[in-house]
Length: 277
Ligand code: X90
Image (cartoon, rainbow, N blue to C red):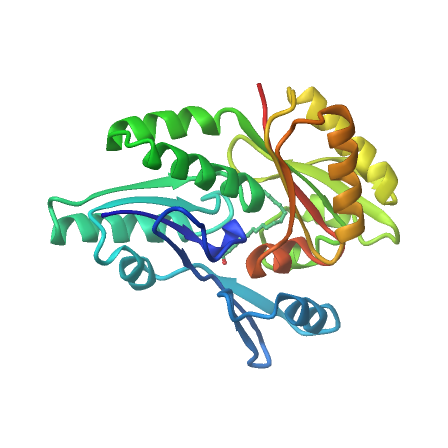
């Protein structure tokens, strides 16, 4: 049996048309509140609660045991993790994959380091579903998926870098650049899978324009686009509508961020995963 497994940074908990498991990351506060990023999580409530919380908060990647449990029963497993540049999730999944293969030598497990998060990871999952359902062999699925990863990108617009800075996921210089009213930080996932800022924009309209410019520069030519947002549906839909204006046949969708991405991207954010030429 073939299974796709991803950590919950992919923003979805189900993936129709394939055997799929999402393994939750965990979010917690130093006053003892804990949020598990699974289908039961009320993401909106968590975001509001943390937005007004003045103490420290943290995240934790899936344990080796949690990954192992998600692999259980499958003989071919394709795993997708959030970037190893910002999380221990990939390392944890690799340890689990080795243990699983030791216990079941006939099993095949491959772990993809997305070097990204959210909507770019989701594009990879959709591609893996397509390759698996086309009946391709294990090595061929890996080869084509790796090639696909060279043709996708992630851009984002953030209102706050507070949670990224608090958890040491960005440098002090980057962190110092924000927290000014109405300023959005526009950025991308670097080739190493870390957060790279491109610039700042005043207001969502300007942020949208910068993102559209960046997409064009990255070689966007009407391929798939996956937009996720944290309590910013209007701007996300507006961006999608503008893209559809240029590319009426493009497959573009808008969805809300899951728990992990919502925690780090924070209120008002947009994340955009896209196919490039
Ligand atoms: O605890 C953990 O292991 C999880 C750590 C995750 C840290 C980063 C999450 C980023 C979420 C923020 C904007 C996009 C940045 C993309 C850079 C690759 C989304």
